[in-house]
Image (cartoon, rainbow, N blue to C red):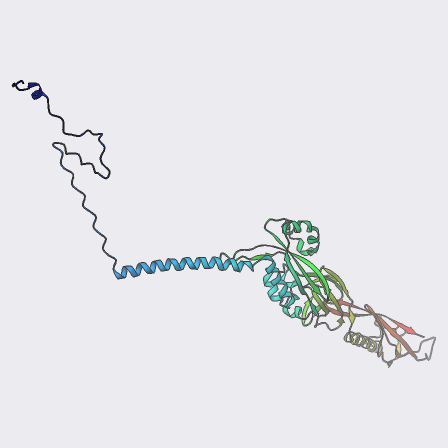
Length: 402
């Protein structure tokens, strides 16, 4: 046993108490913050944020009002879009055409004109009125209205074009609108006086109303041109009159489909005419013969009587239309005997009067000392012309009867 101390153990340094840096901490343990280095001030801890003061009752009420307003606006906008969706279900090209045709069928020309502009001058719109349309003996009855698909419209393009009136198809838009991607073709089937017929309408979208409601524009109005060949100065349907241009015997009027009784205008005194016309699928051309009225016959007779009186007096017996025997400057006697009392022949341009008699006796001459008196029987011939709607009566000769 050695009693001396162990110097080797005294010289061995003590073990480092600091654990290794890669030592594993137990679960949930929080590592200790590093010790501050010498000379570095310790960090000042950040103070915890102050809690927000509670809302006052007025602020809470204001917040609720704002939120409620946002909800109401959102509901209104949503409701508007939903309502416009359902409204637009009935605002189609088909519905627009049906509304237009119903106005015509009901005799409401004013509404029809507001839905589709007739596309003619105001002077030609005399019969596109309620008064004339309601005076139609028959109006159309709507049987069916439907939109055509693009394929069907293309297949029937020839038929569609033929149904569009000539005066309407002059618009260059019609040449391309059938194939236009934005146009919609609507076919309408109707009857007039029991006869079934169809026609087509070319439509395109119009400007939206109130931003969201759809509109449709009908490009071809459902009116027909009726060309009239007549000597009448104007025509009438019921109490609606339309005067013609004096420069032409062939003129035109425009009508909605229907059956009309066309007569002379109410201001016509000397000419009369009447024709019933059925206006339907196509434009028409008609003749209305002009007949002379009794008033014109009386005017002709009055003209003849005045000329007879002149021929039976020295003031007018030399008129070139008087009988040859009466046109004598050397008469001892000249007096009326039998006045002309009638017009015996009366056609569209000529007339012949009844017979009249004038008494004459020439003055004595070197050859005839006592010339006999004579009764000159004759009739007038003449013609009737119209200028600016007024008759002009012309007597051009007298025929003597022996």
